[in-house]
Length: 342
Image (cartoon, rainbow, N blue to C red; front, side, top):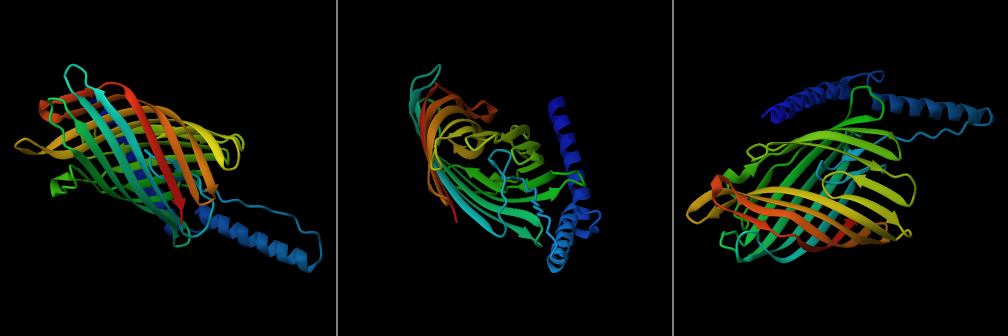
């Protein structure tokens, strides 16, 4: 289709840009490398302050803040991090959706989903932001419709992401991520279910309050192999945060340092390789949209918990090759989530 061909063309452009932007970062001089220029400028400022201190002249107060924008994924949060050194965090959630009737057939479908993710980030060579992650997901299905669905769906992925300066454009970055994955039924991992999705994004941070993101995701051997995405993070003050990106976009209002209210929205498009009757390696697609609201509590700087409720709609399970489809009526969901910074 023309849209997918255009998306593939953008992918080739992104890959070419990443290669050419990476070369000056590793081998270029300080004049060509924006991070090297930052280090050279910091050293020069240090020498100026040292001389002024020796001559007892009033020192000019200079503050230099590094511009570092991190896109954890196109389908997850964009997090702006300013800490130095190694950063680790773990996040987990449990989501419950009670049984709801299916359209145009008898029976109900109820779901319970859980997820656990661990992220490890550092600066390779003292300059290059790199993040590794491991993500595990489980979906339990309680199905009484005539279409046979697996009792369990499981997913395991390992991710690697790197953020590069985008040529010499100020406050602009290019992020590349690859996520080898296995998405099957009941932890039945097999070679045919192995996929290597990848994502490419441009990140622009004009100031500390605003971050803009645009990019594409490439999913080889999926029914929908190319996706585009745009989004932004805007924090106008200490009270409001607009995190409008896929996946799980949120609008948050801080009642206090520990307690916040938020609204959330999410779009899920997943594919699993499962067995159906006598056929093995059948593709089962699951779609889900959600809108809800909740409360977030942060007892200390290392722990953050949230509880949310809302509506789930546009949900369906669909086999490829016309092996069956289940459209689930709109229903209720509740979710508990916890994040720990290590």
